[in-house]
Image (tube, rainbow over the protein chains, first blue to last red):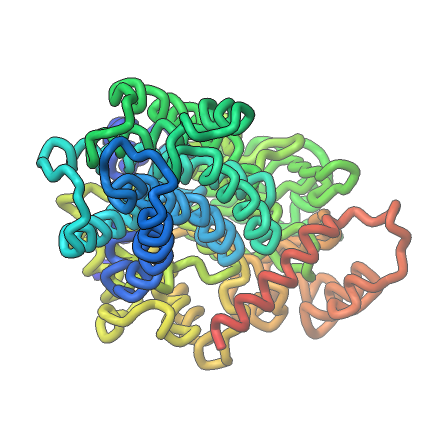
Length: 278
Length: 312
C-alpha cells in the first residue's frame, strides 16, 4: 500500500476532517444512495427472496380476489374486483416489507452493523432515510414484478406511463413512511420476538381499516372513521385512481397526506431510533 | 501505584497518578509534546443508578497502540462507545483527534475507524461491496474511492476473497475485512472492541500482525479493548487496566509487571484487585456496592457468544 497513506500524520485539531469536505446535503444523499444500492445488491445475490415475498399478494389477488369478485358482493365502480383490489394488494405487500424492515434493523443492532454506521459521519436522518430507501428498493422491485403479473393475467388496469410512474412514486412514499414507522417501533421494542408480535398487531388492522379490499362507502361508521385517519387509505385511494381510474378521491390530496405522514415519521424516527436502539 | 518517568510524547505520562485515578486531567508538562490522539479526563458514565464508568482518565499518544484491559463488564465497551460518540458521557471530558466527543461529535466520527465486538460487515454483500459501502458512508470522495479500496485490499491481503459473500468468509478473513473497511477514510484513531473474540489462534495472530503492520506503516493510533492478558502483553505498547468502571493501573506491560514484582499481567490484576481475572465477576459483593453496568455486562457476554458463533 501505500499504506503510508492509510492515515495522515497526526494533524492539528483545527483541521477539518476530509470526510466532511462535502456539504451536509451531499453527505445525506450519498449515504442514502449507498444504503439503497446495498439493498439492491443484496436482492441481486438472493433473487428468491423477492419471489417468495410475492406469493402472499398473489394469493390475495387470484384466490381471494377471484372468489369475492365472482360473488359480486362489493360495488367496485364498474371494474373487475381483482383490478379493484390490485392497488390495495400492492400497497399491503409494500407495507409488509416496510414494517418488517424494523426486524432487520434490530438484527443489525444485534450484530454490530448499526453501531458501526452510527460511528460514521452519516447524520442520523441520513441513516433513517437510507434504511427507508432500502425498504423502497425492495418494495419497488416487488411492485414491478406484480405489475408484470397483472399485465400477463390480463387484469383490467389502466396502463399509462404517467399513471404507472405516479403510482410507483406514491407507493415509494408510503413505503418510506411505513419503514420510518417501523424504525420507530424497533426503537421502542428493541427485541425481535416482541417486534414480530407487535408488527402483526399493527399491520393487519391498518390493512382492514383501509379501502384496500372494499370501498369506504361499504364500511360501518366506526370503521369508516378509522379508515379516514389511516394513511394507508389515502395511499390505496391514490394508487387506485392512478392505476384503475376509480376511487373518487383527489390524487394530490392523497400525495399530500401520505407525504405529511412520511415527514412526521421521518422526524420521529430520526429522533428516537438511532440512540434508543443502542 | 508508583509513578514512573514521563514519556516524551505523552502529555499524561505512563503511570502518572492522575491517569489512574478520578480527578481532572492536567495539561502536559512538556509544551513541545504533540496533542494526544485520545484524551479522557475524569470520564463518568451512569445508567440510572449504575455507574458503568466511574471517573477514568488516560491519554493515548499519536501512533500508539493502547490497550484497555479488563474483565467483561469492567467498562471497556462503555468507554469505547463514548469515544466513538455512540454514548454521551454523564460527566467528564473526552477528546479524540483533538475533537470533543460531546460538542464536535461529527468531526470525531469523521476522524475515526470503529470495529465493534460483534461482526459488523454485511454478510449478504460481497467483500468488495462491503468495502465500497463503507467507503461511501465514511465520506471517502468518489474520485479516490477505488484507489483507497485497492490500498486496503493490499494491506489486509483480501484480493482472493473479494467476490465472496461476507457470510461465507472465515472468522479471520471477516476481521481483516472489517479492519480494511475501517481504514478507508484514513482514520487518525482506530478503535477495536475485542477484535479477536471467537477467533482461532492462527487468525488471532494474523489480526495482530496486520494491526502491527498498519501501525508501523501508517502511524495510525490504535485503541483496543481486550480481556485477554496474554494478547495485551504481547501486542500493546501501553495498557490501561480497568475494573468496575475504574482505571486501576496503566503503563507499559513490562513496566506494570515489574512495578508489582510479579510475573504476568494476570498476577498484576490479582495483586491490585485481590482476585483472579476469571473471578472478576463473582466476588460476592452486594448489588448496591457494584459499580459495573450489569446490563452492559450481560450484553457483552451475549455479544461475545454471538460473535463466536458467527466466526465458527
